[in-house]
Length: 107
Image (tube, rainbow, N blue to C red):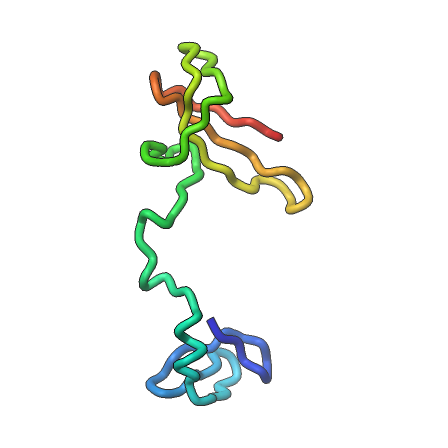
């Protein structure tokens, strides 16, 4: 992602130039610098972490330092999400690998 030197807005590719979406300023594309950029075009669904309560947890990391309140199983899939301000610890969402019970933990 590249930002305009004039106004700070995001620029988008237009052929061999980068054009500001706000003020229209244009510069030549720097192909070497673009090789270092990460884009969503090459992102796969394996790179995306679903953290809402309806998320499919299977395939996510597993922890064994929890205990399911429903069945007593000691393993659960988990995801982490920042649900409060940045100076607060993140919330961990769990799904029991045995019975599917879901819960959250505030650190």
